Length: 534
Image (tube, rainbow, N blue to C red; front, side, top):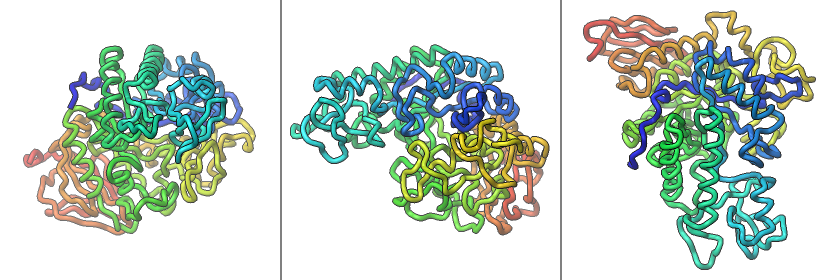
């Protein structure tokens, strides 16, 4: 593994919280969330115990793909406010001990970006990938005077920036080498963009489609080399900043230079099996190419924690102490926890697991109160990716209280970015704040427990006692965790310490050489007896 500066000390204690800015809080009544709205809700995050916020893209964009089609990396979209508003948000967050990360779209731009507008009329410009004659498979015909076609990364309006090809071919002249002028210019541009925002007080970036840079790249070796170069630059220029990758393959991305990679619904040789084996219940966002599976957090109890544990074990062995793995509850591209047949009653066990496993937890906005994935919404800013994959259902407005629009906005309902959950019993922050038995209060207590106990962090040891229903493990020889995601009661033998102090427990009993867990039960215990450090 390439030698990098150790990760900033603060990262090991990070509790991430992902904010989809257009759906979080609207301060000016136009129906779209903004920086000032987020700033007004920072006390919620501080109360919850969150210390690191990641914002989805907020740069200038035509919003064909909800901001992932960037038209200016150095300015923010007016619908969110101004750069000064973002700076104030970062400052106010910092006063509460909360760091802010931006989303960096590294592999492509909007077709409205000035770089592309220049390239489509200049055959000598190689900032993008152009086939000079004809339109090969996957390419889009040139919209300008330049002949030929360009390669998009995702949607047709997202031309791929040119970082070169790992394998060149004389009969395909667009396959330029990774050290050509265009790729060098694009690597320099990434440094400039990161330098600009880090200089204004941001703490790092979550990098979109981080594996997409170099094309035809077996094993992603050349793409990894790009990130290794950028990490070395970052270590020298901004040593307290971090890079999180949307790669989904920590065994490759972290050695390449990322401080953290997410387990995702895609990525790596198993196409995201580790995350899907926990949460994906066949509803919400479903890729038709995914092999059917029974997830572990399933009321019928047909799944297993083993696919996740095995993937995590392999990744940790490869990473050593050089980086971290982040485990999200959901994200803007994937179903919320409360989706399809999964009910609010099942969510406490989910958080008891997510906040005690040795990964960095990432809470998707609204999951702390159990917001639902809403099916059947209209397409919004590129949200539909397939017949069963509409991302809009995970992007609906945050539910703050029981006022109109759930407290998200004072705009008329028909002007909201997306509709609010119409259910009369939809969860809200205000209602759960008033109920100390609520999911919100539990998540807060679990976050506090985790941040106050190093053994529960990513550096603490884990011993799996029972990899089934219930799922039982011991953290740092000190904390016993029991998780039963199924509806039926579950039991297993347990020969460890029985002198255990209940910390967060619902429906779990440890005694007489065994563990009994009621349906959807969970328990976090502190082992206090003489055999606790077995």
